[in-house]
Length: 415
Image 1 (cartoon, helix red, strand yellow):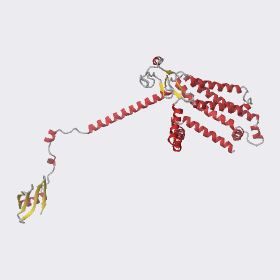
Image 2 (image 1 turned 90 degrees about the vertical axis):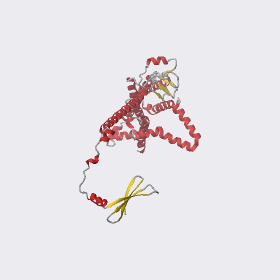
Image 3 (image 1 turned 180 degrees about the vertical axis):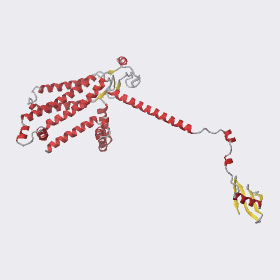
Image 4 (image 1 turned 45 degrees about the horizontal axis):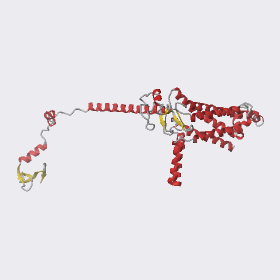
């Protein structure tokens, strides 16, 4: 039973890795663990490996790793092509060695031995056509033809010269930095094909996706029919119900049947699950490119339109913010009164005239008594700029205080 659960876990991990690697950058997976796994598989794992190589081997190992990365990712190379052929060849070998022994079966005919080989051959032929056909290379001899076929829209494409090829870039074209050439109606550079996908090989590429989707579905269904035939031929359901007392219902029989299949045909089940997963991924890729073909758009143009619309959205937001700011400033100007004229302020009535004067103020009476009983004597100090005002109280016969001026400040002190 442990082996069966190990196979199930292996299949689930394989599915998670494939979906994360191929689809983790999709918007629907943003902020999820699938996006995190995608970042680790595409960037994080290599970064950790680079640090390890640099720590162990120093700068020489780091430089060698950078050269390898440059060759694998930034230059044309047949690595992914070899991996594709290895996957197709290895999968077909496992099918032949583990499935052909049961063909013909109860639900599948013997001719599938030959139709499967024909289907794989057609898939490889489409792969070769897409890989080695001209995607629509633009050069000085045919640039005028492409300029007349693809006019500029002056929105995402405007007239300009390719800085590398030194020729005018027709609309819908792009210079591929990996292939180092301008490609007409450029869609994308496909590493699996080691070739650009452009005007002249887009049909081959779409047919390649569609055919491999049908090929994977065909393999999944064929393996399923073989396993169903084995269940019928070995009378597994009859044995479970007659000898083991299992109820003759799908809900009761399904766990026991699955357990028997995992124990007896684990390789076939893994192949079927693998082909089913790849068929789902290929259906997504084919659907996406089919929609692009129906709308006469390319992947490169999709990204360009997204950037343009994003820029337009930012411009509208900036204009709206500017209009809101101007409106706020206008309201503020209306609230602020204009400055008063100097002539108006000169002839304006003083605020002190509005102050109510309190009659019979005790402080006024006190001050009047002081000055009626006193006389003021001025004394100038010749050694300073001070003018001393001495107030002599007539009643008490002595000075009660003095006022002095220093630096324009009047002070009064009691003695």
